[in-house]
Length: 133
Image (cartoon, rainbow, N blue to C red; front, side, top):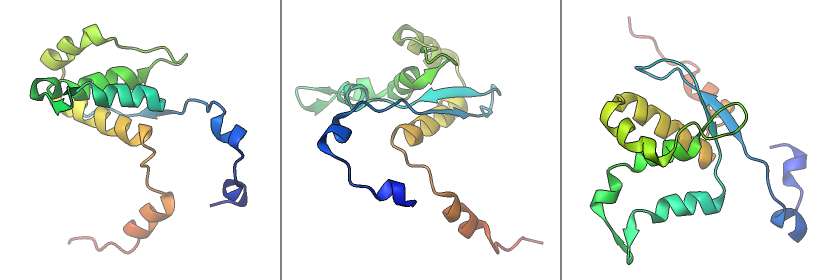
């Protein structure tokens, strides 16, 4: 971590709007091609998470299309405009290969929650790995 990331933030800095983060992922396992994903604000992510509840109880039927709805919230074009809309979810459910949905959902979730592994961890885990032979 660099020293600039260790600076204590002021109240104003904490309350300032942050820029959206973007990442291009792919190729998709079945369809191929790349997709640009955006980060979500806490309000957007919480609205998505809350959609599975009614009166504080999880509604199993609402879990069926959660992955597709998350992709809809995150997939954007180069200008940051959403590529998909909620009305596209039934088409995604009926026509998309599950591998592409799982891949995009996983990449979007990792991007939104900033769960990328540091490159040092990846290098450390791959160094000296024995090769079967």
